[in-house]
Length: 267
Image (cartoon, rainbow, N blue to C red; front, side, top):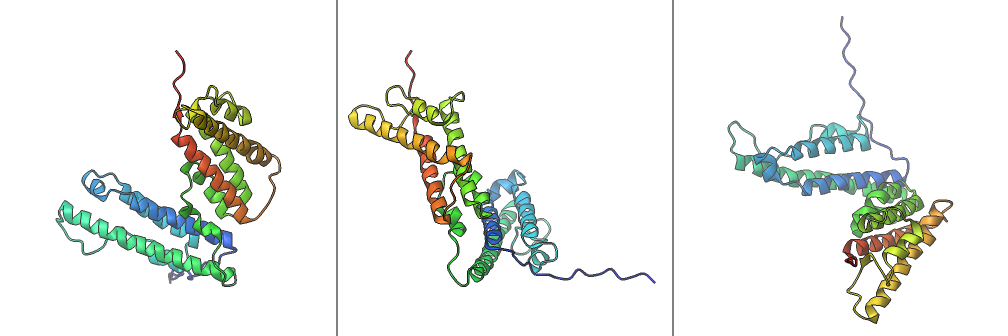
């Protein structure tokens, strides 16, 4: 007599620590952002496939966070970005509408998962408000900084995130200026010099402009000397709040690099 296949036991996910929950929240927030950026008209009319990619990403993220035997994955493993009825010979506009409504429904599902994770995070904190790392996505950090610091910060490696952000800033300055042969303080003094700069923040038309250029040069130089360079050896530990203050400073400098203009070189 053939044996019946065993039915997997549903096992709720037990999170080990707050950092693990923070990372899960960040992952789900990425899936929401991905959904919000999809052009569903193009997805249907031009068959871009971005809606299918988003569906797979959401399912895989839920699987990664909660595990294959979790109630969350059991409920959403066949998740589809669709709402309403589905029937033969639907026209393009009906399909588009079903997917747009499905996007709203899916974002609601993901937001619900984030809400429950936030509650679990507060429970781990003994009822206190969630860690600042839960708000990482809300700080509007420059993408070059956020992309390298996000996962490290969510995993609880706050000052490793600071070091990664400082290296990203240096690389961004090299890319914008084209000065790949320089590094560190020498790079910043060359690129942002008030006398013969490569990147400028104003027209350098008067003393005020020149003072601003010199002052910002020293800010960039200081970021390298006090953050990037020590981070390569033994960056000092500190509070999570202090780490995000460093990251916020590096983000501000990255935005300034993005806004700076290349100064025409003398003929």
